[in-house]
Image (cartoon, rainbow, N blue to C red; front, top):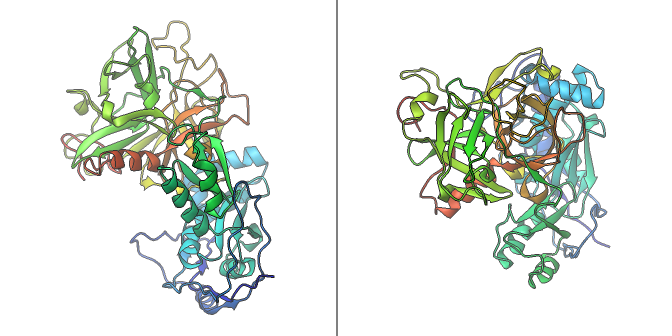
Length: 528
């Protein structure tokens, strides 16, 4: 019988403003309003609470792993600086994310109020996870948002009582569930790094943590061969539950083809790129996000399979509406492109003379980096707000992205009607390009799996948070399908922005300094 020592949880108070009428912004240097007396009291209680917990029942099945060694010495969580995690009111979040509200209402047959509550809980989950990771590393086992179970934020813990005390003061405790798991998140993270080191691979891309399954996933087929003789021993020695799986399921099909386009400057995510192939045909993709390379140079991110492959042996150039007026956009830089999911990216500079076409006017006082939020007739979920631009404010690291989040994606795939001057992307008659929202269903193969319809021509298109403007990934592959979106369970996969940036910067030893742009291209170099 194992006895776990008493755990001190410090500074885990949450100012839960779900349903409150006063807007409160998150941190990152912004002004923070004073907490209410009740919140301050809750913070004081949590900061001094001590709880004892029995050993947890394993919550994941071992596969090639063994249980961690018993802890015999007394352990306490490190005491970090206290302070509440602040979230915005549900009403404010819902107003900023109408399509996300509509998705939840349509998918789960819930009210607008309930949808807003779930989105507020989603916004709370990331800072809560960061706080638990920092302050309860010996108890916290990861978290995910379970939409199917009623919009419940599920928190894994090896010491359930300790983590329950840490989240007890949330405004929405009925929808926060703490469950017993076998391994802490810190144990899994350390084990992933150890396995990756043994196999000469990269933690976080070749060896990843599945928080919902509470185990390590070793992705074979790229850096790690499925028959690598070191693999079985590396998994056994890790001391945690593991599984091995092929990086790219055979059922995946690429989305690369020719999309329609959006010609208005400045450059946005979600517009058409046409790419002539070596054999004289034309393929294409969708722009993802603006990037900055080096000190000030403006680049565009899209999917690598648009310009890397058997039909792309020459240096490719991209255009808008290749059949006319054939506006030049970018040119391939072979050293900044790969076609091996989740490393499916092309980081492309502008063609000579093309940049001025896509910039803000000189002297513009505001130059945000944008994603084109494109509402269309067959997408009633965003009909109440209309087409608009979403400002990109940063990105979410792949490790912080959680199953159950509601996100949005924009694509520009299209099959033209008779007489229209567009190259057929292969989308199929009846598919209308634009922005659709759905749910993250997993993070297999080091990418982001979502339940959102997409078609050939949408590849490279952006996946982002509607309410906060955070970039998540770019479309790579997914379920086959043509024509109108009729399958509510269609899944597609996105290459994470953070994985791409880490990859290209590591390959250049940091010399290129490639970053996501939060300001758009201007006439002249992009400001840092």
